Length: 212
Image 1 (cartoon, helix red, strand yellow):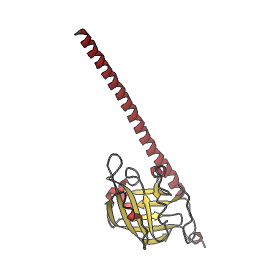
Image 2: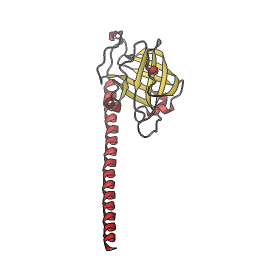
Image 3: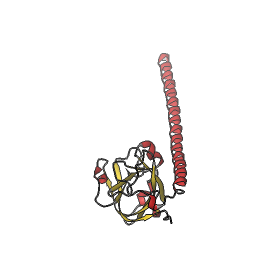
Image 4: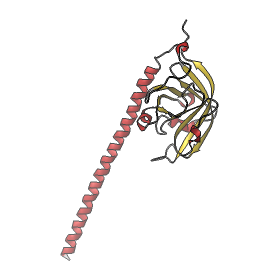
């Protein structure tokens, strides 16, 4: 009987130690996750602030800008997107790698550039810069600015599609804008679907005054 009691106490002590170790591991993991999330938010904020300040102080005379958009390197700033009604305003860069999408809205390289005829596709995280898209409505205005042009778009429709629905990225005959983010917006983990916003171009304006 005494031997059974000793074994039982040893088992209980081992269980307590295992629980304490598991608790410490979970605590450390939680702290690391929160630290990374905080770093990601601050990194995005610093990048957006610095690049917005640089972008909005550059002015290129319209008659000196090329007819076709100049090639943009991976990670290079293309312009700035704004949805006034939603308070969404963000720098757009070339590329859609995870590193770039943590900091900015990414232009999908296989799609048209602003100023080209076709489908300009932009992507961003649902828990980051594209979170406001959960409230977007048909008829909303989207502005896409490059250093020498300003393009106005009007939202035509939104849709929820599977990740395999690459048809939304296919070229179009008319100048269009497609925004892509994960869905549902408040889903924990890897979201199973994609939220799509399709808009058509309504106007193009120069953003820099003509030189005399």
